[in-house]
Structure formats: C-alpha cells, structure tokens
Image (cartoon, rainbow, N blue to C red; front, side):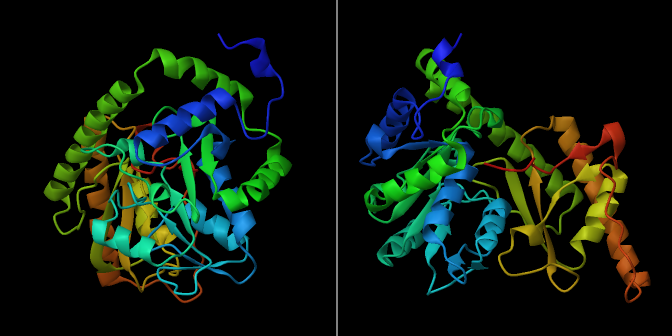
Length: 353
C-alpha cells in the first residue's frame, strides 16, 4: 500500500523517485536526462498545456501535419494559434515521431532528419512510443536537440489513463517558466497516482509487460485490418506500426457526421476524420476518413463492428445517390445511447493521452 505521505502535498515538479525512473528510461533510449529535468504532470495533456502556455501567443502558427491528435489541436486553438499541416513560420512543430495519432505510423528517418535540420522548436508527443509493435520505443527527438525539444510522455497508454500521470521535459532555458506555469495550474500532479507507480514499477517487469501489450495490440490490429479488407475492400488503411487504432481513408466525398449517425443506428461508433484535420471543417466536400480503435474490443466485437460500419457506409452511399439534404435543414446530434448495450465502439475514449 502507498505510504501516508501519498495523501499529503508534494513538490510541483513531482516525486524525485518517479522522476528518476522516467529519466533512466529516457537515458536508455539515448537522451541525456536527469531527474531534475523532469516535471511530472497530470497526464500528457497537461504537459502539452504547459508547453503551449509558455510558447504560444495570439496569432502564432503551429505545424501539426495533415492529421493530428484532436485534443492538441483544440488546445493550440484555445491559445489563439493557427494550426496547419505545414507552416514555415510556425512557433513550434507538434510531432509524434514514434507512433502518430491517428495513423499509427512512425516518422520516416528522412523526415526525422529534415525536421531536426530545420532548427525549429519541437513539441514531441511520445505518448505511444512504448507501444510500437516491432522495435519498441525509438530514440526520441529529445536526444538530438535537447535545447529546443519539449518532450511529452505518459503512463496512460502503457499502464492506465486513470492514474493521470505523465511528464514534461522542457528545454533547460525554459524549465523555470514551465515549472511556474505548472505549479500555478495545479500545485502538483496526482500524488497518490505517483505513489502507486513508485511501488508498482520496481516489482513488475515494465519491459515484459510492454512486450505482452505489443503482441496483444498487434493481434487486434491484424484482426481489424483483415475484417476491413473483407467487408470494406475499397477503404485504404495502412497497417499501423503501433498504438490503438487504424486510420482509414476513402475516395468518397461525403458527410462524416451523417455516416456516424448511421453507424450509431447500426450499433457502431468511430472517430470522424475531420476532427483530426488542422484546417478542414469537414462537411460533404472532403473525402470521408475515420479512425477505428481496436484496443478495448474482443475479436468478435471487431468483426461485428466492421460489418455494422459496412452497412452504414452502404446506406450513406445509397442515400447520396437518391436524395440531397435540403438547404438549411437541421441536423440532430446522435443520441449518447444510440446502439444500446450491443454497440461495438471503434472510437477511442477521449482525452487520448
């Protein structure tokens, strides 16, 4: 059981013992990190929030790539920033080089080198790095540019999101500013969650646990990919290199919300593609894209979910050929209970980190 100190206030930078464990893991990946460099945060989302508050001013641009993590996009916009797939004048580049959300892909070596060569400030979101299916967590960008990389990590993907424990490693010159923002926002991260991790990590093989998780999630990703090839052969979905989901793109221009409504009526949920786009508001002009998450579904639920999605997609295509939405017609949001107890959700719970 955690000691009584876990129920008291702690330091705003977090437990020294836990910070030492995080630093050691990053040193094993090639980064020069000491416990004093680490700020323990309330999940990766707070780490992103601290970085954004220190770095962003109204009107700044943030480069995020063609599809990115929706809660990060919302956060940057909340600070008055403009998000763009490419922005030469960006205040910083937001990147997920190990395993990106939503595509599950790793940043190719040539693109990694080009990003580092730009000399730009980088916010590196490493949330899924431990869940790469084959090679494990790669060398972080932090290892090659510690003076301008804000490194973000979390236990939410590898252990559980309910602990709300993540970390931020800001550049040395901005650590004091980051700590000030962090302390002003919450005094400290969840002390009880930190104490649980302090006792859990030394007595369980974290690497062995990750190896099991990678095999487990890879099998589910393979099951989802097979089911998509069988029931929705026109969908494009490169196999992910890690993470919890498969990113799907189509050549069909249509209304993703209308497809989601039909999916909910069939008993399946997914994340519509436009919420991952930095610039597109969605609507019927863009090709339909979606993220399908497999992390919490059994094999039979994955197959059932894809079949339901296929019925919804066919229904949408049929309606597009026969009717048009009247100008000014109101749209009713789908019920939270649509699909009932039999619903197979291919939508990952948010917030994601």
